[in-house]
Image (cartoon, rainbow, N blue to C red; front, side, top):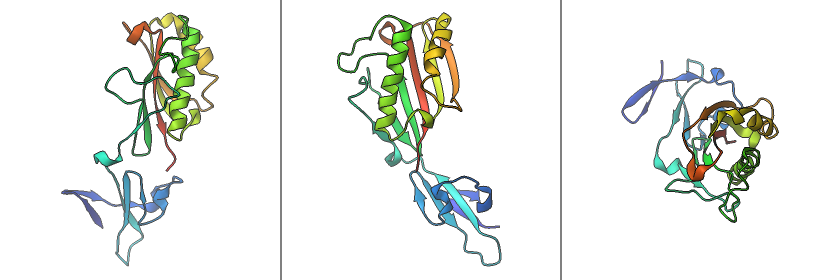
Length: 185
């Protein structure tokens, strides 16, 4: 059995045939953002590979766009890391004014999703890239109204999702949505 070493940790190799995903990892010896790929040099065995995901700070990249509201505190609109995009909670604010579009949950939901779309676009992603969302509502009774608007933005298969009623949201918002998206390598 071949082994590869990453820092002081030994990781067993993986049969490349088991990696049944269309990704740049199929190119032996290549590297993708935040990952490395090696092939063992053994002559009498089938090709083996070792995959490592890097946690070095150099692969963490902040995403910012003027087409969505600026962060309200010491955080980024989104972070790219290891071919994933982590979008911070988005509110229904108008980017140019920093004010809510209205007090209705329907209008705020629509604006939240438009703002999120701009952040996704600035990251090289779109709604179809989203794999997980978390919705925070000031009132869970708004669940059905939010669902009707949300469904217009996410193509099938819809992302995994959690929805919570929370005690309060920043600036007394009615809704906040965060998401995780998979980025193309």
